[in-house]
Image (tube, rainbow, N blue to C red; front, side, top):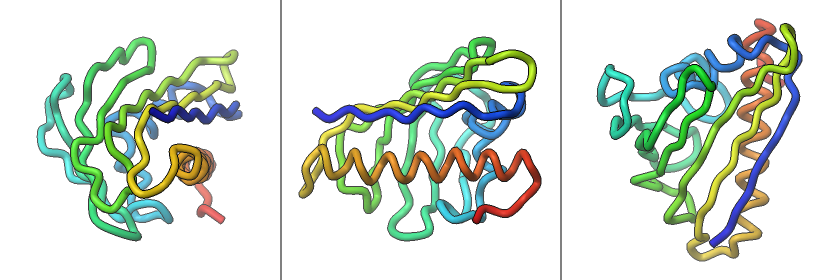
Length: 147
């Protein structure tokens, strides 16, 4: 089983970053370079709800919320339909930690098994995807387009 994580300090208040990375907040990033839209299958925030991400390159994937602690700005999720991704048994975790009033630290981590590629190859692809996601969050907060 492979593991990967991305960490980044973002020079924006934690609450603003959480609004973009939270379970329902990711919708504000739709239409960018990573995914075209997000379909939520339920409106009540609770473990077990699912959402479908329509990625720009490949089949949609479906994620299920496993647990959430909104006051701690963290949640865990599982990919229950990997679409075109070459991975299985994927579990992820997102956490935003305040770093004073005007900045925060973000960690996105995952465990997985590669399918048709090595765990190392998937980890490298995943890190690029998550770095792009964090860049999109920064650009969204700044009100600018992703480069």
